Amino acid sequence: MKIIAISTRSVDYRSDAGIDKRRLYVNGYFSEIATKVGFVLFPVCSQNGIEKIGEMCDGLIIAGRDRDINPKYYGEEPQKGLIYPEDNYEDELDFRLIELFERQKKPILGICSGLQSLNIYFGGTLKQHIDEHTSKEKLVRHSVKINRDSFLYSLYGKENNVNSIHHQAINKLAEGFKVTAVADDGTIEAIERENLIGVQWHPDVDDEYNTFKKFVEMC
Image (cartoon, rainbow, N blue to C red):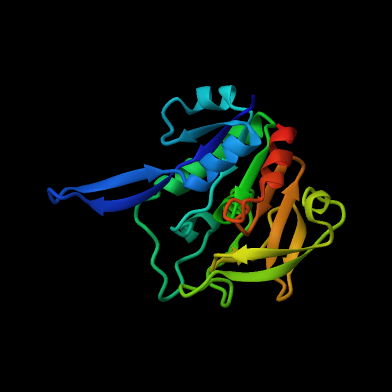
């Protein structure tokens, strides 16, 4: 049975005693997916012992998250009106994991901001804000066109209807990657480079088990 690492996410909160704390978590969707597909999910909560984790695990999922990636990582200042967290815990963990697994030639699946982390790590940039790809009132959905020569085409064919929960997107594509899915408005929705795959939507939210099954087979 394959062991798949996944980056944990964080949320700041104040305890009943008035103490500021950070809670680390993995979205429950992934536990259900690991059970259905049949792999061991290994949450990574710090960089302590991370080299050992890289040796032990067969692949990596960079999960989506609520916090935007600090634009300093792609050489930009925050746009007016956008607030980025001072704590770079998630940014640093994602980039360290990408470095480690890519060096060992192990497959990586980036989901939503995970796609953005892959693009930034390899030298790309982001559009810090786009409209109409997310809403607080409802789950936005739209179609994407998929390139024939891609990981995604073998799963969905030439088109798929996907969820959309993001307000940032790829601007400059990182060198060596190819765009494998695009929304009707031109937003890049998926990228690939050898065994590195990024999707802007959340296959975990839609219970797309075949996406994870095929990824685990790559591992």
